[in-house]
Each structure stands twice: as C-alpha cells, then as structure tokens.
Length: 591
Image (cartoon, rainbow, N blue to C red; front, side, top):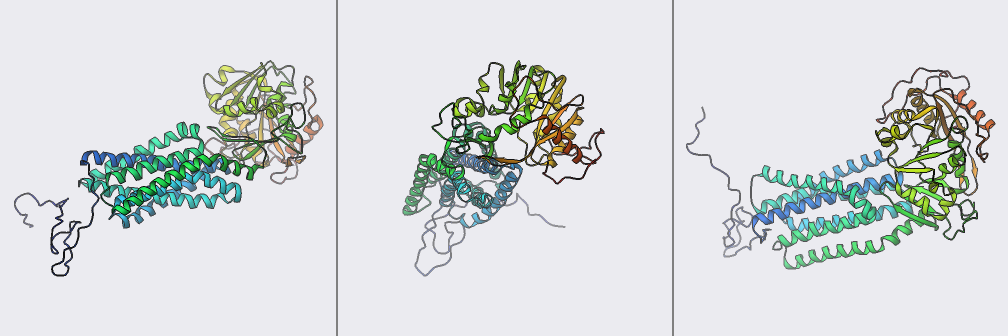
C-alpha cells in the first residue's frame, strides 16, 4: 500500500519572480539558481522579454499577430501553387510538391527555433522580416527565373523550403512569448495559439482567390502580403517586447523592418518593368497585352502598330504573327488558327439543321467566326469561363479582326460560366436548349484520363441538350491515346461516333503544326460532309475528312479504353459496334 500525505498535493510554481538583487547563490533571471561566481562579484540578471502593457492586451496583440502571420503564410503557399499552375500547368503535381515540401520545411523550422527561444521577441522579429522579404519577392523572383533560365521546379522547391522553415519557426517563438506574458497551463495556451493560427489561415485562404488575386494579381499581391507580414509580425512584437533587445540591437531590428518595407515598396514600383522584361525574354519584344485574370494569365503578342484590313492588321502575316498564350501555353497563332477551328465546326454543321448552335469555350471568337459563316444559323450561345478573354477578343483590333468581330454579331449571346456547371444547372443548358449543333471547343489536356471537359459526365450533359437529329463535335487533342476514352464517353451517353483528324504540317510563322483529333457524335450514325450554305473551308475537303475517318476506324483498338470521369476513375466501355481492330496498329500520337 502506498501512503499518501495528508492535505492537497503540492503544485509547481509556474512563474517564479526573479530577484535582480539576488546574490551568486540565489535564483537568476531565468528562475534557476545562479552559478556561483567569484567572491564579492554580482552577475547582472539576464534580460527577459516582458511587455510593458498589461498582460491581457499584450496577449491579445500576440494572438492577433499570430492570426495575421498565419494568413500571410497561407497566401505565400497559394501564390506558389497558383504560379506553378500558370507557368507549367499540371496543378496536381504543383500542389503536391509545394504542400509536401512546405510541411516538411515547417517541421524543420520548428526544430531550429528551439535554439532561439532565449530571446523570442528578437528572433521572431528577424523571422518575420526575413519571411516578408522572401515571401513578398517570391512571385517576381520565380517568374523572372522561369522566363530567363527555365528550371522552375528546382527553384520553387528551394524557395518553398526557405518559406516553410521560416513559417515553422513562428509557433515555438509565439508560444514562448505568450508564456512570458503570463504563465498558464500549456494546453490552454496551445489551444488559443492554434485557434488564432487556423482562423488566420482560413482568412488568408479565402482572401487569396476572392480579394488578393483579382485586385492585385500574383506579383503585387505577394508584395502587399509581405508588407502586412513585416508590420504585424516584426513591428508589433518589437513594440510590445521592446525591453528584450539591447538598445543597439533594437535599433538594428527596427532598421531591418524598415529596409524590408522599403525593398518591397521599391519592388512594387518596379514590378511592371520586371514583369515586362520577363515576358519579353519569354514571348519576344512584341507583347501587345498581358494580364492576370481571375482564372488564367493572358498574353497576346504581335505588332503593335498594325493597320486594320492588312495581313499584319489581322495577325495572319507570317513575318509578324499574332499569338495568344493562356497560362504560358500557346492557344492561337494567326497564320494557321483556322485549321483547328474549321475542323471543329464545319463537319458538325455539314448535315442537318444548324439554326441553333451551342459553343462551349472559344472565347477568342475564332471558332464562332466559322459558325457564323453558315447562313442558316439563327442564334449562337457561347459559354466561356473567363470574361477577360472575351473582352480582349472584342477590344484588341488585331484579335477582333482575326475573329471577324464575331462576338459583336447580334445572333450571339455570351454567358460567362464554367461550361460543366452551366450544363448541369437547371437554368443553364436544359433551359436554354435544345440545340441543333453543340461544339466543344475547350482545349484538350495533355492526358485525357480524368480531364473534366473530356469526362463521361461532361459529355453526357452535352448530349442531353441536343435536339432530335442534333450533332455534337468534340476536340480530343493531339494524341491518339486521348481520342478513344472520349469516344467511350460519347458512346456511354447513347451516341454513335465518327472520329476524324487533321494531319500535322508546317505553318508559316507558327512552326510545325500538331495533328488534332476530333469526334463527331449523334443519335444516329453521323456523316462527314461540308455544308452548302457556307464558303468552302481553306483546310478541309470531304475526301480528306473521309480518308482520315477511315484511317482512324482501322486504328481503333480491339478493346477501347474506358471513359474518363471527373474523378479520373475508369469505367468499362459500353457494348457497341466497331470494337474490333480491322487494320494494322498505329503508333501512339500518329493519325
């Protein structure tokens, strides 16, 4: 049996008050016995970081600083993810790399912060000034590095690691500061600190897409976030715990915070010139327009002084072509843009009614131009996600001339919405339809598997808005491997399909053109023909379309891959005709 002493258990002393006048054997400034010194000597007490204000307001101020710093840290993280998606695509890979490196670096930063908890206020001010400088300049640095040298992945991993180490050092230092203000149970202090941290992360995560990115853009948004970080993290703590550092160290810390703010302000003043230099290194000297919309980066290059009515004025001059880049990827090249747009539009409108047309994507107005060449068209509904793209296609003289000013045609009605969400909305596709022709001009991704706009769900929704006898045309991309999952999705929607393609070939001023595959689908077996109510296309003939369709029918795999889904899951292909390979196998990516 264990005998317990009578009376309440002894409680540990949480906050012993050091006696500055204690001798060599008394308690020191840190609450522990002082080391004995020479006889008659008195050791000066160690300076502790205690705020001059009352504990309640001081503690609230530290938690507010944690809130703001957490919001800024998440904004830096989202900036790196978004920039990687803009520059090189593949958002899943970019998000995975940034998040995994960031979390690992935060753990490393927490370990390193243990060495600096003796002077937490000074260390926290240094960490926040460094984080404000590195995070604020991160977007401009990465953009300039990518445009000049390439090698974006190595640069973003290195920068993410530095930012993560600095963010990870915040929590241990903040925890020490809170305990210096007023000693309390560790669990309660951790709960308050993490609550402020998580709520700040929520605010930063919501502010980035809805406020920072639309109002400032990536570069200016990162710089503004850095300035807020420096003020909230460095200056506030230095003001609260201004007795911790020595006067000379305190002056250096204040000077450092000021220099960080001056550097960020100078970078903001020069950000336009830095971005222009980076774009010129990447796109050449003739950048007509560059902007970051809510959804993508839009860059238009070409001669600035083009005269309307000339080849240069319409962007079709091979010596000075008009080029449109979306998120750094080429979307339009003036001299040969008609090839893809003619192949998407004219076969679908070659037979049957074409009075009501639905065009999904195509905010540049080029596919719409081909639709309006058909005299039987009475109305066109264009569904485009990004209003900035349609605005540019209307206002830029060269791009508007290249598109034949199609967006200003009275038969056209433009809806700015996500095409998939619009199709499934009760007030969207079903209410606006049915349509005689549905054209999916959305860009095909590098991999058809799991792609949203080539998924079985999207194709099924598009098939639902077809009128009796209507046709659906889908751009399937430049790889033969991406063609067959799209065909499986169309067949799962109850449609019969006919694949066709345009061959690769050199294009003056645009470099080698890639082959492009398309699928034409209808409730009955679709036919390939060119309509008599429109001028003959420049790049298509009925004989060429039929020959391409025969080659692809012969190359169809004996067991076609299953349809892609929004979640990337694979479903077995539906039973249907033409599942046997009737010809020799073709190489992947060849038409």
